[in-house]
Length: 112
Image 1 (cartoon, rainbow, N blue to C red):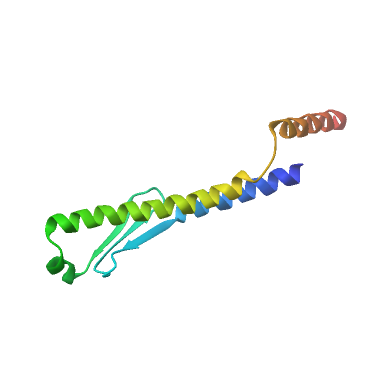
Image 2 (spheres, rainbow, N blue to C red; image 1 turned 120 degrees about the horizontal axis):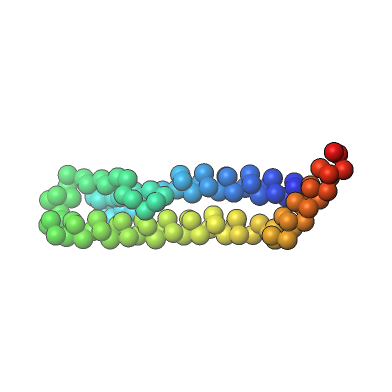
């Protein structure tokens, strides 16, 4: 059981690190505007090509950026759900942990 706990701890640390590094990218079909969203849903980068300023009016450019951020965030949610699903498959009941704790206490009492 302790090996299972150690495996779960390692797996949780791995997934936590992956969650922190997640990013998602969205680009307009014409590739004139793109955004990158980080793991916490914050915009990390907005790339606006010079041609975009000639192609889009200001209000349309603004709406396009908002739409790209929403698309990137939706992709990020999907990535997060897939990662978290792998963690949710780790099974260890509280009773298993407590039973292991009882065994550890019993062993410590015997050593004394």
